[in-house]
Image (tube, rainbow, N blue to C red; front, side, top):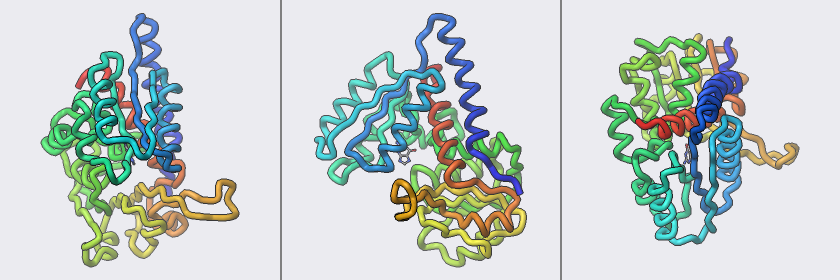
Length: 290
Ligand code: GUN
């Protein structure tokens, strides 16, 4: 059984990016610059954004964080995005999701210039992804592809099941796995809350990507012997014995999965770290130009 260690795979991606930024610095050029926008103070969002900023520093990127009160007007946010769109020293713009209910996520996403949309959420970039054109791949699916590549996981002709159809993970993941790329060419089934026979569908899969946000959802009886299991879940579950009062739980019952699967991503230390690697690669891509 192979543990798909995100620490190892993301370190390789980051080391490569660091070499590139060092070369830019040596040539007297500026380095890639990521601008992150955070609205409110949701604990998980705070952690993710802090980690994104820290990882920028570690790879020699510039970063700036724009924080807004939870009650901020949508128009103020749109103005900030417009200023960043126009700033030639900013390569990538990221608005951490979810946003408060009074702000339209789609309006905000569509306000980001597609050439700076390092999350790959803009409809123009999603369209490019669907058509197999060069684009920004959303960071989590991109990170999973980088992980499969790093560990030489064969995907061609395999039956892949993606559980979850979000714009951030499930849907782009299903498109990538079915597309004609080295880590694609799978026959993909996308499952969601209305799927019937989910257990049977999973039990027939060679690769499962669990991205539904329900801790311990995927149990051993849903896993075919030798399957590859990718766990995207990162739910905070209250636990008074933990230092922070909660533990991070994946969508996969890890103890059961390791008894059946040929490879499993741990949580934490798996896909989460690869998401950051995907975002950093997209920021370098934005700097160079699509
Ligand atoms: N919230 C959860 N995942 C993501 C992500 O990949 N990007 C952004 N901007 N927000 C998120």
